[in-house]
Length: 102
Image (cartoon, rainbow, N blue to C red; front, side):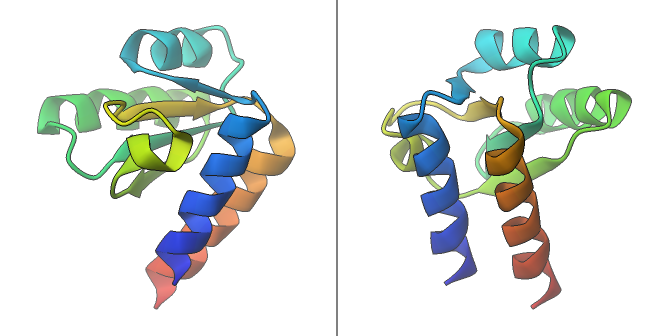
């Protein structure tokens, strides 16, 4: 159920145009300080996971994991997305934290 809420929140961000997907775009958004949260597909490689966790830690932004990320944002083959709007980022982070506590 929480995973569905997380997918919905990420989908809303994508439909609102507040989500940058793909490795290059997401990395650029973090470096340019535009990203307020990063979402990774649960199937990303260990190297990608470590790279983004490090970037997010240095930037002080949350990094969340989700199955079928691409489907949630309407772009099937995407594995990484950066959320660029504070309200959506907060909603995604809170939903993810709630799902991890259960």
